[in-house]
Amino acid sequence: MRPDQAEALRTLRKKDKMSTEGADNRGEKKDYRPGVRMISVTSGKGGVGKTNIAANLGYLLSRMNQKVMILDADAGLANIDVILGINSLYNLSHVLNGERTLADTLVEGPGGIKILPSASGIPEMAELSRGQKLTLLDELNYLNDSLDFILIDTGAGISSNVMYFNMAAREIIVVTSPEPTALTDAYALIKVLYQRHAKRRFRLIVNMVRNPTEAKEVYDRLSNATDQFLNLTIEYLGYVLLDEKVKQAVLQQKAVAEVYPNSSAAKCLFRIAKEICSEEILFSDEEGTIKLFWENIIGRNCG
Image 1: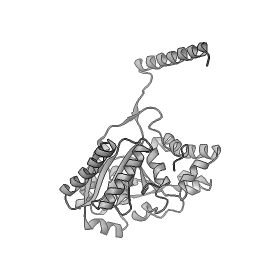
Image 2: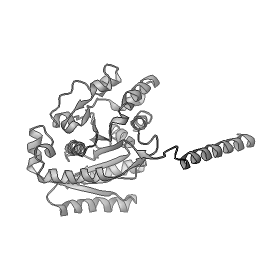
Image 3: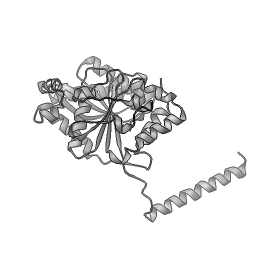
């Protein structure tokens, strides 16, 4: 670039900045606003109750007058609809293939939550043609004004599919249990997302604990490891007590917070949902849109 071209570019940028600042001062433009909060609920290994927690948080947030969609992003063991006793005829693959619209695919769950059932081969979205990408973005973007939260129930582990959705989410909740292997795998997941994909904020839910003390001990062990080896501080979001009512709710294909709201597990989940709901998070014009979320997924490739 020639010096005169560079100077012209700097002048243009300066004018743009002054114009934007002037609009802000006159109140003609709002830089930040509430947007759709896209939260992945993820885990290092299976069997820690991740999907159950995602389902219950979705239900509880909806009971707090939030508009919620749960995206079942576990292509291998998609079962949000099974846990909630919902029959879904279509899934995301039908949208990608042009067989159904997104409106046809969404199903309603308890409390009015919307559920987008999973499709196998989610990473193949990165190989869509430009036309397919634009079609998908248009289909999903119409939800932007009708949702407050998208909860993404990812698969477990550090596979490519899991990375896709954790990369695209703005907030990450890691679910673990007191089992040593669960703790080790949670650390591995956080390490990969932090070192390879520059994710820096992680919040921990410790599930299936006998008491709050055990939960805090689990958090301390994981937090000490991330502090020492990654120089990363993780946040403690809460715990869920081991509760027989959870198993009973699963057998009924219901959220435990719906059928046993006074159970110890449901009360724990309510506290976590209330904490999430009480946060005021503002986004710039593009940050709070579903379009940006899907652009992050289909526009990136990760191994």
